[in-house]
Length: 199
Image 1: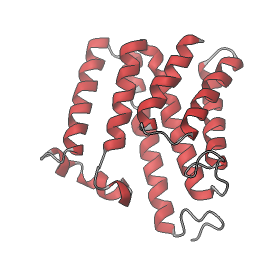
Image 2: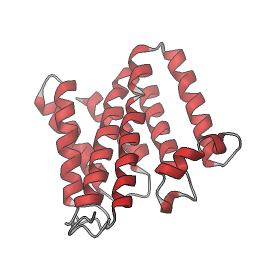
Image 3: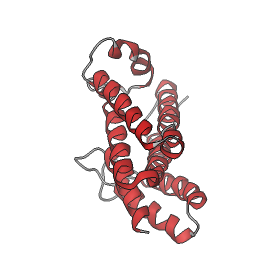
Image 4: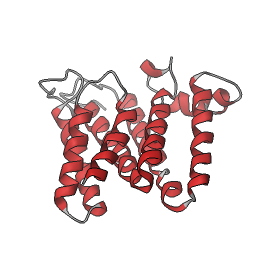
């Protein structure tokens, strides 16, 4: 299978890898909704510390953790990220933890925005993206639109008023569209939750 016009992926193996990556990204991050919403704070913090500790051990290639998660690295990590496996997951977990420490249960907004928006924008941008944003060589109009639409539809279920959903979605989509020196997995949960708090 070949994706016509994209130029980002040309083979079916690349497309299948991206589908697997984004499905894993979506559901793994959404799992944080359960402890944030339903567990006591102390238990949620212990879970965060445990997950982040194991995640860091994988990033640093400490055994037996690195070997245990080797299957996921082999089947889900992009070739360019193999030197720093699981680093993006580490940033995501830290971003969600900081959001939870500052804003409590409202951190679910950041979890949802990161899980849904980042997954859809990356998938659509890499598979079908043809038009780069004028201020970003790596981000596409198609990916940014996918981010906005997917997050907005979910935010309509979270907020009572559509203007709140529009504002949180707009700020988050704009942030994600820039090429920053700080990983967006770290920034998106924190910024989107902060915007929801201000609303």
